[in-house]
Length: 373
Image (tube, rainbow, N blue to C red; front, side, top):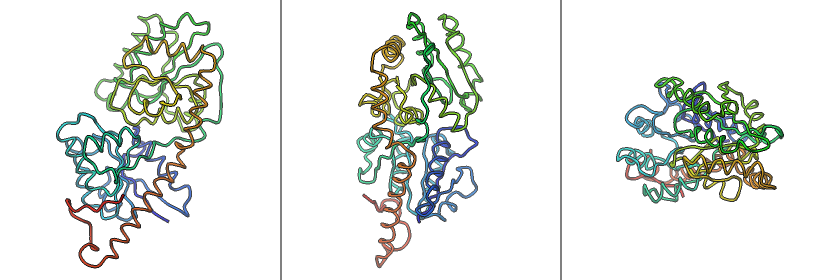
């Protein structure tokens, strides 16, 4: 059995990294004859010491979750870890600042393996940051397999759904504008935006963004079609909500997003999807599991909504395509990929320690990092 320590933000923090890590640990613990895992909070007193008690350290990375400029404190933690390190990169920027590029490069250099959540992120890392492709592994974001268990139809008012932490950049305004474009449909869709305001946005701006969306809907004459639901949902309740959606809409403004848990959950739930061309969507929906639209283009969103709700066979085709992808996104399959990677790293470390001489003692210094292909 192999043991994993997962360094991350942790619940009750309401952020994607905490949700991801909690799910990964839960599924690594599902088969205790093969692996066990524990969450190690970033804010704990001695995270490296806790990670060193495990066989493999899995270090989650997103800019801003560690202390210091762009979270540079992660480097100090990595340098203190003595077991094989897997760094999981949730963001790989195309145009980083000089320090962001340096920080990410140093992290990759200190890691035994680097996990990214999409092929787009892997290509960026190899081509843009010069990371050795042999140490980069693509393991997708996981999704709960049970999310596709129920199917709900809304014949009179089809439901469009966007969920997740709310804040500027979510692109909700483009869907609101698109509602005015589809008001002539026999069954006019309603639009549900589910999720709390992001804690950092709430601290800086309060509910200004949510209020601006309500005002926009009123100005467009579609306020009666827009609903906000800021309730916190359990995994079971979220699965039921997603199952009730006729179409999931991901209108994000960012052109940098190489990983989206919401997108992954929507595909796993076999829901028809409309998404802007952010990198993860362009990759995951390429085979027809959804429709891609330009960023900040309400007319294109309106055309896509009309197609999904009225074009014969289109929604069913999307669901079929999603069903082909979904098994690879199941958290059980994702956890198996981490077990396999962890086993490979610990076996390689054992072989190194068996070698006579200095190579078999201690952790290589920076510049002498041993890689595992």
